[in-house]
Image (cartoon, rainbow, N blue to C red):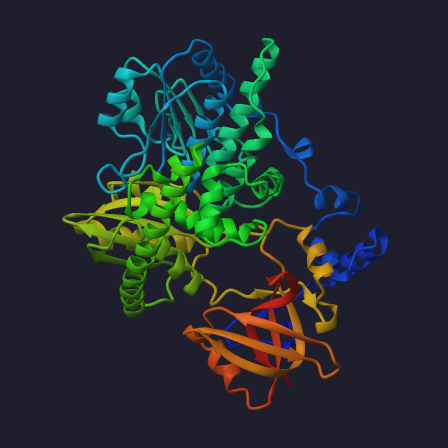
Length: 582
């Protein structure tokens, strides 16, 4: 194991700081010189193992370079052909979508495309509590009676009986969840995570799969002398879904999000405009805005409100309707936060009593709202660096949701539990899963899940190391540098934003903001100073340590960002960790 960066073996938050390897340092120096890049940007590219000849393409990801041929996915030709036949034949189409952001955006993609073709479709989104995830037999039977084609988006890969029940209608599945050994009896199942796929496009969310199908539909239309809608205008929906579903920002996802953010900045979609306004977004959209401001509000309808609100918002062309739905979703999101806080406190107390040092952290409670168990599982995962499952019981059966850590495939483990009969049902993908379990099998199921996850290495590490791209001086942290660093983005899942360290800093002002946040001014004693904000610092040891600094000097670490205030742009550090210097 290499020496800790700046000698920090255990920081304020209990983490070991890890810097670039010697090889990465050499590659960064070579890139900086050959490509004339700032050292900080070169360090990021070296950590991503971007060779010199790929630097330009990496910094300017384009769909032209990265978009795959849709036909590399199995069943794509059949799916696109049947969808187009329904369009040209003016057949009745139903869209069955999941109730989260990815499902809502996927449904909105199809509805928006059809609207531009002068067609409508029936949108059906199941109620999270009454119907649960994915197609169910009664709903599919009803839709099949009144429609010629049912398109299941962000669901359906494991829905054998419900799809078989859709007698009289063709069914197409456009999904990305982990597939089983057999496929449902649909006309086409397009899913990069089918077991007979090579996984090369496994990082796509469902909206990405839907977008690829529409690319193929447009191509088939051109072959028939027809023209379809401009698909670039739909990339705002794909970007939102990709970020909100925590899909890895690698490969074509980088181009989809980068271009989608540009489309969103044009404020052409009434639903996203209304949502941005109620969220009080006052700058151009970034992955942060999509993941933490817009996504949770779209999700709020499916979590604790009316399931189809998010999809309806994203699909509507009516600004008045968009404003009304966005306002309702904003209210629901506030209610969701209150419910989440109560469940989180109870779940954390239970998990701590059980112990946080095993391969799995889990908690289950009576009446915990199924709409927030996934968020709470994510919070437990972040706090412990372990896969986490949170289950809410209503009667004898509990519905739960899990979140995983890098390198541990939770979806496959949950699917195996279902196959072994320990779960009523379960499925998902590498980083997230859903499950249902009876009360009498809860302890046995969680013990078995922990055993399966331990075989993958879960629980072997303590708090996650803090990986740093390198050192910076306060004077080097300019708006221009942050702009150059952003060219290596977008940053998010699978492509974390780079963290930089500022060594041996003297603290100036240290001020508590609100209940738990901290603002700090710091410098190196040579004139240049920088400000930092640490959100939630007083929820852990970071805030008290810095507030009581007593004149000591510190190494500080975090992400650089541009803070816009009254038309002025200033760089600030999003402070994440600190350690005493010397």
